[in-house]
Image (cartoon, rainbow, N blue to C red; front, side, top):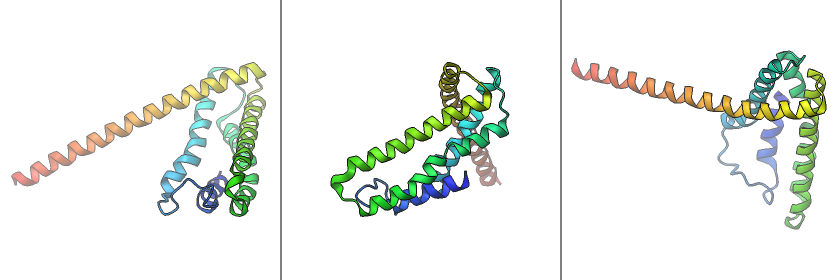
Length: 169
């Protein structure tokens, strides 16, 4: 997972300018961490919760391990993709995007196979659990957003009360 995070930073910052849609001067490591490590951890948590309900055999630790191993196609193939992006010309954009699409499809296939094996599901049950996992991810993100919003409002309220008390003294 740490290597995945580092490789994603390298990919974001070092991809050739013709293929890089990111503003390399506006890099935020916390946003990048949320986009990589956060997404994987939320997937792992949602998959473990759904699989526990659906009689899956994998533990949270095993789901985390398979989540890390399923990222290997990205880890292995991204550095060559970054190197290729720095020597390729703009006319080869379709081939570059196809290469990235193959990497992502391979990674998704690895995730599906890993979920199938760790929980000892059939193929149809794996696809159903994956769909429920995606729904679980959306629900977890909504809960996180609601809790974050409540804490922001609570701290703003406490700050307002403290300012009022300080002004009254």
